[in-house]
Image (cartoon, rainbow, N blue to C red):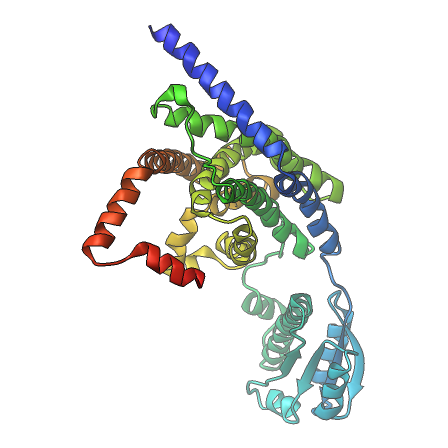
Length: 425
């Protein structure tokens, strides 16, 4: 009995799996999203962010102080990798005009009392104005000026303590009591693309899978077909087989697409991959499985084919932000923290960065993998519920329609007359 049931289960699963594969490969829009967008988007994003390091950003200086300290500061700023002194302006109006003409991307302003305040051992201030048309300009301006400012603070402290009669050793112990070297092992060049692309690659897997599946669901509903229809021989008892059969049809091609995105694309563009192949692959398997059931659950709300493209514009930036790659998750409001748990990308991106970018072992991504497993279980059951509910509606459509007519009749509503009015007849 058990053996016969197992054979029937496998046969049903195989039929559903093959049927869904035929649906996928017979829809040009789905193929476009899966195999063109899924393969081309990772290349496109890497080409756009290929030069992730911006050097020698042009800066204008307005030095109203004209003192030894301001001139030293200007020389050190010009010596940094991030900034280059392109012009020394007489006033702020001239510097502002250069920024408006896009000749410089930042302005450093020294007020007239800058040197006098330092001489009186008071706090001296300088101003930095950045071109915010690009994050890279702002980053370079802030990094370059801050590094020089920290160095200058140390130099000023050394000069003041030396004038107070302290020896060189005492000055060194006071200014820098603990010696340290600044070292960023994961992104030493502060390359913008290194931390951004890792997040985008995982987002592409989730989003293209969701949009492709939703496109197919919307198409079937426009044709008055149901993605959830159970084969007649299952008699409403094969929800699990439908979910796993349909899921397998998406999981199989996306395993190949996911490996291409996670391994081949970074190798093409020289993005460091410090984790082991096996551990990243294990994370990828959990992530793709989670994405399949996530997509199957939420695609049930799609009623029209074009709705997918509206969702693409609205959801993709939100998913990227919720991963925490551009803003720390500890600073999220509670609502957005909880909302981020709906998406596999939240944990998939964090785990991928821990393994691939940071070079941790499987323990570094253990929490994310556990979260993906929990999400997979939840979304599997929600997918089954969605399939079951839609099948129940299909088989009880006539009864539902009769009840609606009865309720309308009791309320004194003529549904046929309303339909004619709406149609403009």
